[in-house]
Length: 105
Picture 1 (tube, helix red, strand yellow):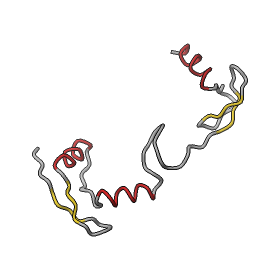
Picture 2 (picture 1 turned 135 degrees about the vertical axis):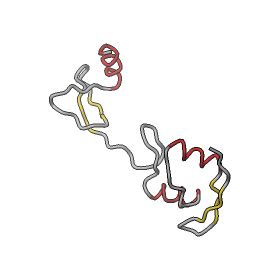
Picture 3 (picture 1 turned 90 degrees about the vertical axis):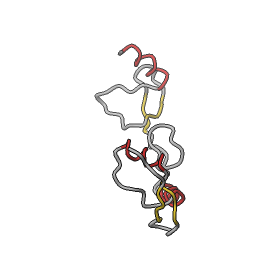
Picture 4 (picture 1 turned 120 degrees about the horizontal axis):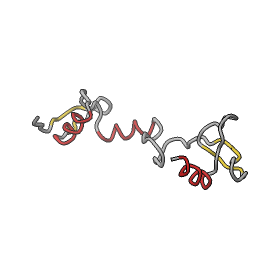
């Protein structure tokens, strides 16, 4: 499929922006069917207002991940984990987890 640059009008600021052929190809490959409604600047502003966007570990911006206190089942040190510990499952500090996790595979 051949794509050509398109001029679109931003729904927020009203400015005209270019929806490039490469962006259209990217949208198509991702299965997106709608064209963007906002210019890149307004998209970035909206993303920042929503908490930085980004996903997964190490994403910059946004709210800090909630951590829960726990005691390592292997060495007994107090640590923090990114999930709420359950009494029926052991919790390990990062150092012990790397050792125990490798033995489980």
